[in-house]
Image 1 (cartoon, rainbow, N blue to C red):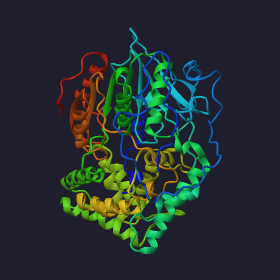
Image 2: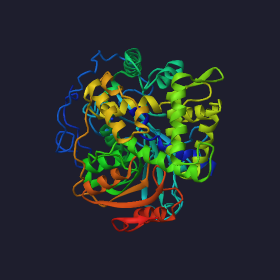
Image 3: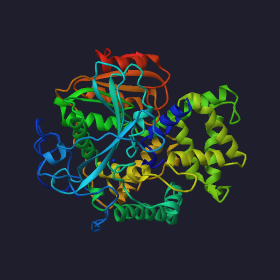
Image 4: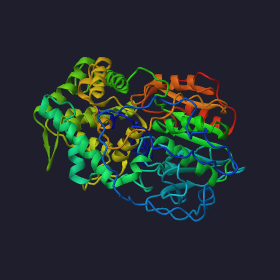
Length: 532
């Protein structure tokens, strides 16, 4: 599965459940200090930086003068005070929010090295505390990258956390904040359904051109924003928000890619860490386990589950996986018509991966979708792919996919097209069942702005205890990532959940839920605690 589909859009599952139950970086002056606080490291980054990236195949077009919605003039004043002097004006939220929810907008520098330049708009939602004494604000993020975070405020499990204001925000580039603007409608349909596993030179050339054209569409629609949408930009935004709500220390809960934001916040601002919990950790420790291996494990668990229940896909795990890969192979040759659209191999793979994020109590839907598609009805599997891709019934898309690629490709250097193909071969080695359907990820090698790699390593020296939660059966962020993050963070505490699904807090484990609540309201759990 291409990398654009391999970092979890956790909230797509989490919110649905609640409703129903990655050339040099632009140089400049150091990030200015905020009044009353210590600045980040002198160069605006961590002490240990990654080597200068090469990214040999990225195009270098001129940056157009595009202004996405929400790019505005900076607030009145001069220097950092123009940002830190803002007042949060909480008011009514858009339709669909919980009745008690309050919403606000604030401005942050488009370019954190130019605090007198233009601004981006950040959108926030707050669920106010209902118990005293007040413990401040708990910021929450659902992952991505690219996932809007404001809706999570209303869906986040807050039993036992009623002393906190729960605040979710749409990170820059996403949702109601200043968004990345890319291809839309049918152009997005084409981009997200193109054959990811080219069988020859013509299909390979078409896949390369698709990624190049998509990146150019994002540059045409987003302009300078594409240069300032990194995780470190979001970390600095988060620190601005912490100050604006009046908290000296940050309380934060992040799922999936949200663990990247949280751990890198702790690296940049260790003295401002209050309570940070990170669930479904991403790979900050250099683990050699690839993400697709996590999905392969989840597929194996599903196949066993399915065979034991005598599902319609086979009586043995091998037969079940054979039914799924057989469907993929058949769709590569002949897609299934679904209305005025069709279910092809790419979309079928997306739909299956979508359900491998879920805990086992959702696997009946996956079994039914594959069984129906094998019988010629691809509607359910196509709906699952659309849900993952954030495609509405009218053919429109939200900001998730564009922001995912934009953030990821700014965050990480690449080894070009050849490097993408080497990685695809390694995915096949680590995941021989699903790896062949992943294909080479050409998005970042052809992205139209140079990367700004995140500093390494993440150790957060001197930070207060940081809780890292890992699920042994996690598909999107393999358990090894959580172990590596907890070990690498100087104050990391590992909480293990022996179960399935992507992330654990807010799910069926009362043990995990109680440990998280206890961490935010009292002492942290013992390191290496296991919830079964």
